[in-house]
Amino acid sequence: MTSLWLDTAPPGRAYPEADAAADADVIVIGAGITGITTALRLQEAGARTLLLEAGRIACGVSGQTTAKVTTQHGLVYAGLADAHGADAARRYAVANERALDWIADRVAGHAIDCGWRRQHAYAYVTGAAAREQLEAEAHAACAAGLRAIVVDDSPLPYAVAGALRFDDQAELDPRRYLLALAEQLVAAGGTIHERTRAVEVGEDERLTVKTPGARLTADHVIVATHVPFLDRSFAFARVTPMRSYLIACRIAGDVPAGMHISADGPTRSLRGVPLPDGELLLVGGEGHRTGEEERATPERFDRLEAFAREHWDVRAVTHRWSSQDAMPLDGLPLVGRATPRSEQLLLATGFAKWGMTNGTAAAELLADLVQGRTNGSAGLFDPFRLSLRALPDAVREGAGNAWRLVAGPRRGPDRGVADLAPGDGAIVEDGGERVAAHRRADGSVVAVSPRCTHLGCEVRWNAAESSWDCPCHGSRFSPEGEVLHGPAVHRLESRPP
Image 1: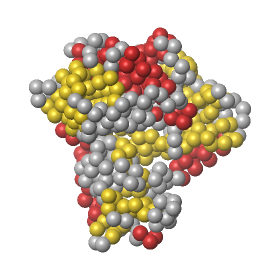
Image 2: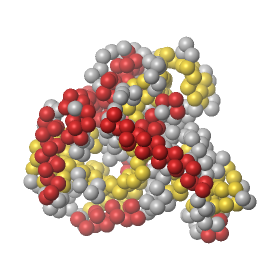
Image 3: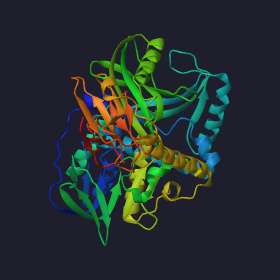
């Protein structure tokens, strides 16, 4: 369950925990692509920047991605033009084009060894009836200023009814790339602390970030933790958490050129990954909402492997892992003020599975906001924009989460402790109390509170990844209760097994 990128990249420099008070111009929380890029841009612009990471650099969502660096985000532009207008689609395209160019310039200008290579990006359909969607998307993308064409076939070894092709896109190894940016940040005078989880941000004349070991102050704080942990922003209510799954395969023969994603279901995302001992094929898909216990099963990986074996001679599946994405209700990222009145506390979330470019575009916007500079994406990505089209989805999302909050305790226990096989987890009743219990491979049992420490929803067992997942806002915990993914910042309380 380790991603290909984390398994094959060098470990990188270990940065110390924050264990003493410190002061900076800007504190950036979260060392994924958005956080590292924002901190680097600000440090190079002259700000004293401090970057905090709860785990290790680029080992969170940015270390689990397919790492396609492209302005082709499936079939997005027609939908954006319809929902927000043609100008919004154009500004979204411009922001992501600038992001792609910034990454390309950074890789070339600093000779970053990160597997960077230019590729065509294809969004394909297998059903003839869906081809008209490609034509509509090509029209919208071209109207937004991008170069897009519909072609009849693709490099894939199976028939397609058509594909939308973007030329001169790119792919990379995200961990190698971000480790290099971190080194550049430190070389420019920035400070990085790993294994330092921010648990609170206080607002006064200056902002204070509290961690278990330190109080840190700054003029600006940027929360780039994928889903912000600060409830005052209510960002968690405006995105939907989604899991998706990936495998890496060694196949006989050549991996097809280009990056590919199916535009009609089921979703299949494909690209090659060059390694010293040969190229691997990456296959992704099988997405579902985080916390859907009945869907978070090992069969997700099995389906991806079956798809790969149907179309290629698979010699070995070398890696299996999964990732999490924040899907914005109105299709646009949320980047900017954390509260309507705050100009110093900023956030970024909602990249809709396209974090390489959207995250880099967010970093440019965040850096501009801190410096008081004009940015064409500011109004478009404003977290407090008025989106009447998204209102029904927001109401449904809120109602669904309210139901999940009360429905968990109402249902009976899943099973008894005695029913748990090695590797299993379930909500059980022990001494009249509901607990989240897991039987380890050695037969011992560990139990924790089933209540997510974010807002109290009851967690669900993820059999595909052996974790406790919150169905409301996507927090995830290890079987022992340690936080794997926010917005929660506190572990699940231990219970007697």
